[in-house]
Amino acid sequence: MTNINLLPPEIAEKRKTERRRALMGLAAFGAACVVLAVFFVFRLQVAGVSSEVEAAQQKSKRLSDAKAQLQQFADRKQELQKRQKIAADVIDKRVEWSKLLNEISMVTPSDVWLESILGEEGDEGLTFRGFTPDSTPTAESTGTASTDTTEGPVLDAKGHKPVAKFLVRLSMIRDLKDIWLTKSEKTKFEEQGVIQFEGTAKWLTSHAPSSASAPTAPPAATPSSGSSPGG
Image 1: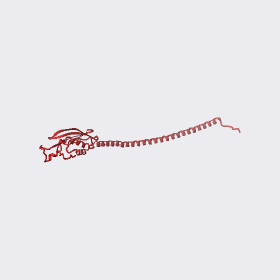
Image 2: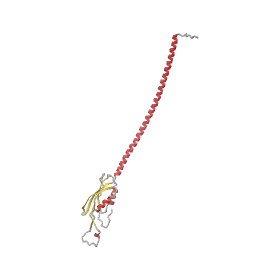
Image 3: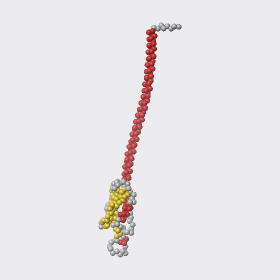
Image 4: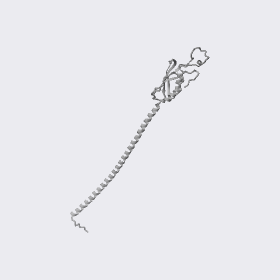
């Protein structure tokens, strides 16, 4: 069978053009939908990333605040350590004068009199000055059967022995070291023969004390040769 197209060519061409336009419109609409879909997807991704960034910033702020608080504790710890060090230095450099003077009095022989004790700052240590009688009466002076016709007591010269004994005893004090005799000479004190001596001692540890001194007084009473020196 033979098909015969009775439509004019113009109408057929017009219909083809309309179909092409419809297909192009659908294609454009589809492309627009795809673009919109991609846009919304990217928008959602950007929103998600933005929320993560905001959360990270908030977390960073919280960490910064916590760090600032911890830094305050660290600063306080450093300040406390500084104060502890200062207190430790003060305690280490402190001299317990009452204890030291008591120990010195305990080791001082009965025939030695200390005139002054001076504590110097740092490594200077201790400086002391005192007297000891140049001679002491013997037991013969008190006996009734003595044949000596010389008036007055018979003298038993001890010389510098009491000073040496004092230095030896002074070395027993644990807070002192390097004890030296710097001067020892015979002189007169209120018409009595005495030996005046001076000496130094260093601190076992570094101290910064104030001075401590004893008032000037005459030497201790001279004991008889039969009695042992105390201290």
